[in-house]
Image 1 (cartoon, one colour):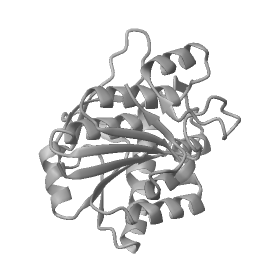
Image 2 (cartoon, one colour):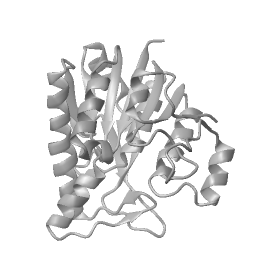
Image 3 (spheres, helix red, strand yellow):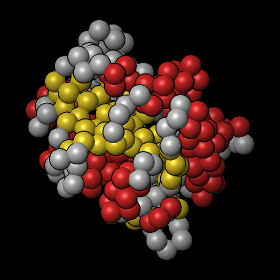
Image 4 (cartoon, one colour):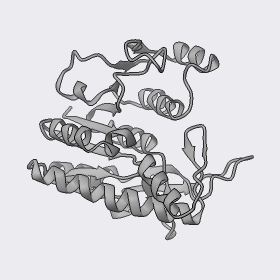
Length: 258
């Protein structure tokens, strides 16, 4: 099957202009089909605080009331997404920016949790894989922000790691999919203060152990949950690490295995 690479970047790359510039240079050199998914939580937090909102996170996931949703849409789907698309065009990558609402590419439903009101947070229900395949086959590099919709007119804030995972799962039926989660660290670490303590291979048993010991916490939990879900549903390869791994298959990083 034809290969497609889905790459997700986090807020620490986005917030560092030099790091983002280098990442987009590396990303633009990837040949073949590719999809970029970006977060931007820190930028949204800064904007929210500047207008008097108090951001709230639970287990790495943002509580999103109506004012916070407005900020998320403005920052994610607007400022960050279009700046990334413009920079990729400068690298001769014909990128196009999307929320889940565009072309009904990612449909979600408002999260219904028994004890926590997450607000306008979406859980992905479906991906329009045929349209995504058409875009890729026509030379378009999709760039997704962390906003989806419920097909009833409501936008929803959606975890970007989850979006990357669901896109990978949907495309794995017709492509050989590699999913890369890129952030500022060289991989998942045994010790979050020691960048040399990279876990070369993470399997489900080790993940469960480290989570119970609180060695893995916060935003890494939904990231790894999504990794194991993706592998169980057809995604061929998943790596977590610094974006330098995009140009070097032998780079230090964490490979996820069931």
